[in-house]
Length: 135
Image (cartoon, rainbow, N blue to C red):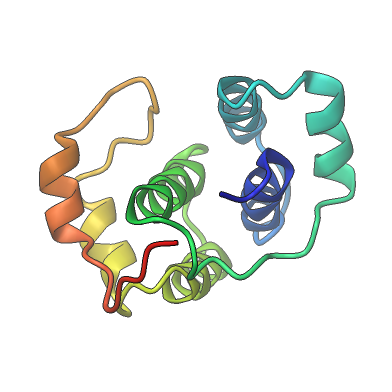
């Protein structure tokens, strides 16, 4: 599993794909970071200086799915989805081992609010990795 800082950094890179960080996006980063036990000071540091995007293909299927899910939440958080956000999400999705187009398929069924849980099994069936090799 990747360190929490690297997971949050991927989301920060997505945030920076559009024109700025909206309040909803900022709150979502804090929510996700808090869920990983990371404090607001460390999160602020990553917002200013994110780590490079790591290799994500060696993550377990569950971790890949969480990355995908968090990326969709972040992309939808401010209610505006720009082309650069979609391109970044597609790049991360391919890095996770999913096929091109999963972002479009998956995001139809994913709510922007992370506290509203969709049927995880159904969403996993929509977003099956191309090749899976758990570590």
